[in-house]
Image 1 (spheres, helix red, strand yellow):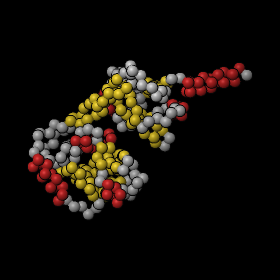
Image 2: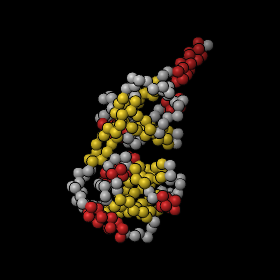
Image 3: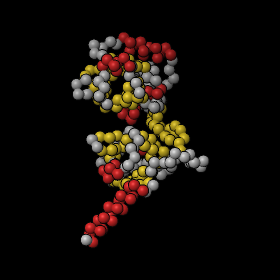
Image 4: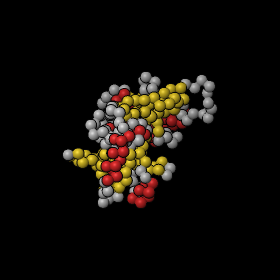
Length: 270
């Protein structure tokens, strides 16, 4: 009887904690591979009454805020895009314990003394020499000359594609005619002596579909794509996975590697 009472008390305490405490947290150890993604504890996910937003703000020891995206995979919830940058910025190491807190949903009241903090995102910084309009036109002309047998589209890289925000919209007519609606990722293939593949996320925003986020940014940085570079995306396969061959026509042939930089993008209430 006493054992049953203790069990009842434990269950009551847990229920009270998850339903009434204003904020709660979990502690987890950083396991191998943690720098690419971090899986939430099952109990934390199960007892989170509020639907967790796709975008989460992490506050580091310095007080700076980092935008990280949540991803649901077969019932698991994990930090994905933006997590790697947070790890690198705070020198998080394997076997290190970290704590994460979740606040209860705030009341719909704006407090006059709400603290403002800075939200950061990762930008890529060009080290390329200044270029001319003639050089940009030449890159576009070379891309226009390529006409693959497979379905394809051409894009001239803009600053929002390669330096900041990192969202590249795929032409609407190409999406409608060639892209199945159930695909969420694509492989981008570059032939550069040895063929390299990059897994990239397909994101749908209203009526637009594009290549987005950290994985697209990784592709941009790995291949040193710059504003004005013209790319031809050739759809080679839709069998189980979308596969594009990417043909790059550079404004400047001499490559100057891109730098990665954390940039304050706006102030948010916290």
